[in-house]
Length: 472
Image (tube, rainbow, N blue to C red; front, side, top):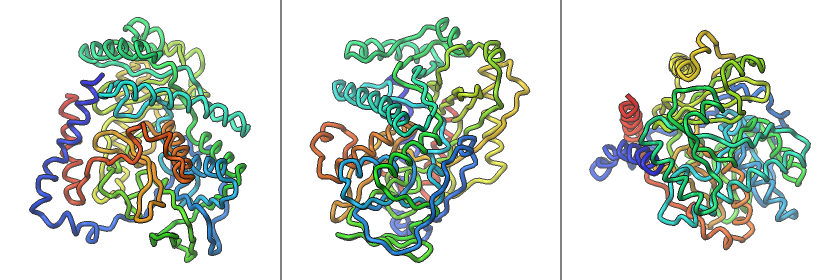
């Protein structure tokens, strides 16, 4: 699938090239962050998954001094706190969450659990042996999620029946066949499914064939948040919710200030803030916070699912540039997400009419895939920001003048699984155990430059329009 992946990256980079070409002559790019400060605003999670948000902890009510302050109570932050305490039980570790744990992308995503990183998913790099190691690492992490769920006694509804990428064109089919052949020669247990096998599994005939990864799966995202919150607290981490860090004074010992007037001194700082990271002044030129849209139906009966033809409980996403992805909940609801994303000036928020048009797009796509669902309405629909890097590659590492700031970002659609892989890496880096991870390309990776406003907005709008043209 190298052609598909390369096409997406080319379009995304090309979209920003116009703005980037102006940067040498337009000083506005340099002063832009001072003119347009990104709002420190966190929208509430209105997703179907949010109904299972774990009970919230009290907010921070005093000044404290800690060894490690973790910003963000999602998958990255909670897993990092869990692993840091597991490695260094003597350290005081606190998680500071602006709303409730799982309020961001961790608790409102498309629920697919995928192996690999997005830039190498169905796409071999120049180092296939490293690609295989990334596959093994991420496949093993899915098994770790299952074990952790069992250990906490919280069922996160992880189903490891595999995951499909359904193929839209004959060119995609040929690319998938070539990828599978090479992957299997390296020992990756992936499969190519012809159209009939695909129809037998999910019922629809709108796709040509599919790529199947038996190590993928589906999960209830907010219940996985609950798993990691419980694991982190059981390991001794402290979690404060509804605690917004408004500013950070970087140093050998960081000084964090909350919006309520309290301060936190921390020897190490973990940025686990995903698409919100730039709002705190970090990685502004590394990621693009885009809005994704997801919707869910009411529950179907077993008989109704049989009539639809979705016989194998396996999630799937398509091979188009603007990807759609679908899955089944434990109680037999169909959820669908993706399609045309949105970017709003200076990381702003869209209005209700914008969300309604995107949800209507999801409705049309659901009926296109399953015509018998015409007339079925969504029980809930929602949106929220996720972090995308221009080349779809992630980065995890350390930064700052004193190399005591740790981060993970740029998940680009693979965050449900990759976040806790990065949480584990962050814990090792914080403990000074970098050596095992040096072989991986995402360690301290420099992400492609993203310009400031207004060039970011211009580039995003150009890119999104370009994507739509490629699908027409």
